[in-house]
Structures are given as structure tokens and as C-alpha cells.
Length: 106
Image 1 (cartoon, one colour):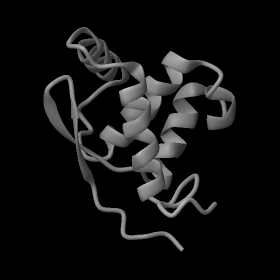
Image 2 (cartoon, rainbow, N blue to C red; image 1 turned 90 degrees about the vertical axis):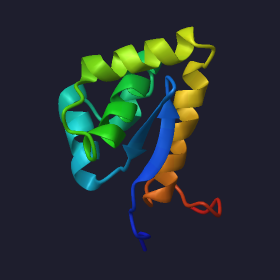
Image 3 (cartoon, rainbow, N blue to C red; image 1 turned 60 degrees about the vertical axis):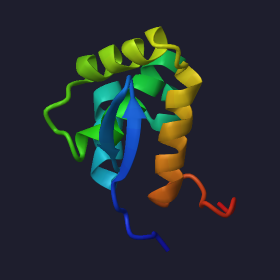
Image 4 (cartoon, rainbow, N blue to C red; image 1 turned 90 degrees about the horizontal axis):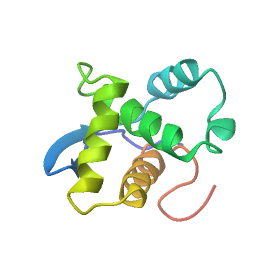
């Protein structure tokens, strides 16, 4: 059973954003990528950028994929890492009830 899917606040490149994954946002991700999420995971940078975009677009629809790529670049230039972004996305997906729960169950 899915939990209430409230947006979570995340910090990327020194700014706060609201992150929330929905079925619609994940469908938009796959539509944009032209492939399933599973296949997309082989493309680390593209996958990370699209996963972050899908989570942010639900609450900040004005952000484009290109904007999100620039945010990730700024995050890395300011001392962050791509892995930081991946962890934020993974936590958001788990909290939304996708790809396993907070208690480690699938």
C-alpha cells in the first residue's frame, strides 16, 4: 500500500526544492527518455538528470530537463556529487512507495 505522497524538501546547489514522485511523473520520465526506467539506469548522467527532473516537475513545473541538468552541474561545482543527487532521488522514490519501502521491503 502506498503511503501519503507529500512533497519532501531537498537542497540542490544551495537552493531548496520540493520533490515528489507520482505515477504521472514517472510516466513523463519514461516518455521523455523513450525507454523504461530499468533501461535508462545504464545511462548514469541521463538517468540522474531525468529522475531529479521527474521528482521536481510535480511541484515546480516550470523547471525544464535542461534547468535540472544545470542544477546538478552547479551542485557538483559547489562540492556536491552526482551520488548525492542519486540518493535524494532514491529516497524520494522509496518514500512515494516506488522501488521498495523505507523499511527495506519490496
